[in-house]
Length: 133
Image (tube, rainbow, N blue to C red; front, side):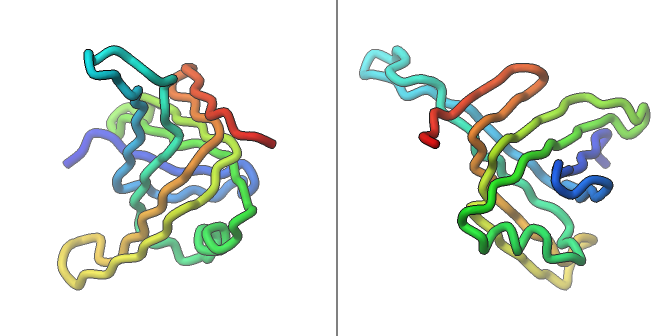
């Protein structure tokens, strides 16, 4: 059993939180043939799997290609209920939405989303994608 838990929150849906089962985000730099960085840091996509919510908030976001949302994911230690890490996302689009069902296992219906964010902040470290307005 995991010693961590995570909740997804949106600034335009206060009081509502979504239980996160899995989350992945990364930053990369392209390299040249000698292994030296040849691009600025790239990143901004956040991959999230959660128990399928009973509402349509996330699905409505996905089908609106102009809708941007901001919010954060709070990772915390279960035994202490203390925040371990926060990942803030700003001006994010929902660019993928998948729902999977399996009659086996404890989480039989899960939804996976991919957020493409203009800005990510991880523990106070900012990454900005240079998007035109």
